[in-house]
Each structure stands twice: as structure tokens, then as C-alpha cells.
Length: 110
Image (cartoon, rainbow, N blue to C red; front, side, top):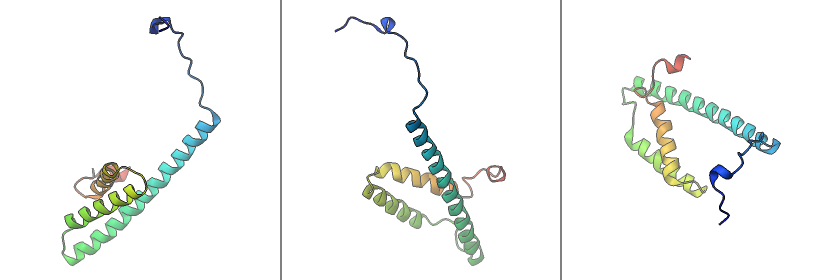
């Protein structure tokens, strides 16, 4: 044991991120943007499906279909080395965001 305490330590100086770290962060930012584009595409497809369902007089939400989607995506995530529960929670959030009652009407107008 060195006998040094936190008070005896010199303060750590934060250094600017390395160019490698900055590049990785830009990659993440780009990926986040692409994920938003995919969510937008999904929203548009859901809207088209709802239009069809309204015209056909069938319920918009299909709980059995959503349950099947959650299971499929969780299994696919597990096969890619991702946590099944985390992937399922992520997809649940995506599905919830697509529901008309879960969306704040002002959100779409921004």
C-alpha cells in the first residue's frame, strides 16, 4: 500500500480525444443518423399499413403480430451476439413509438 490518499493525488488533466476516438465518434454520429432514417422509413410504412387497415375496417394494432416481431428480433439479436432482453426492449420502444396513442401530436410537426 502506497499510503497515498485521493487528496494526495495530483488532479487528472482531461486531454482532448485522440483523432482515433474523434473518428469513432463521428462514425457513431453517422450511424445514429442512418438509424433515424430507418425509423422514418418504418414510420412511413406503418402509416401506409394503417391507411389500408382503416379502409378495410380492421384494428390498427395487432398484438399477436407485435409479439411475433419481438420474438423474431430478439432471436436475431441473440444470433448477432446482442443481449436478447436489450434487443427486445429496443424493439418494444420502436413499436410503441409507432402507435398513434403513444405519439405526442406536436412531435411530428417539429
